[in-house]
Image (cartoon, rainbow, N blue to C red; front, side, top):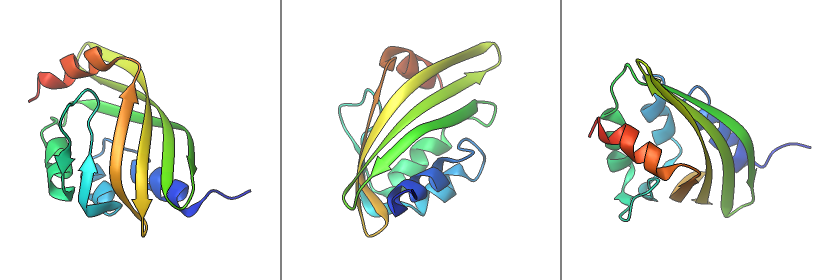
Length: 129
């Protein structure tokens, strides 16, 4: 059985996520007016540029590894189960997320992410903000 095209799109966008071209690769799969809810945030990012800019603030020495556990989708929705490992220097931790996306015309139009360790994620990434 083959994956839905949106599941394939998502896998392509997040394979080897964390490399220097991750933002550019992801941008190709985002609608220009995407609404992007960050883990733990009460306000979303609006627009493709805002999403990519938010990722550009993460220093190159941060090691970010995304393991896609599974992706299911249909013509309107996509759900991805992710195991992420992130670290820098002697700091490293693993967390799991569920990402829920609205999709249309081959682009993510809105995205929510939910994690098992929101506090730890916020603490880690706040040091770069």
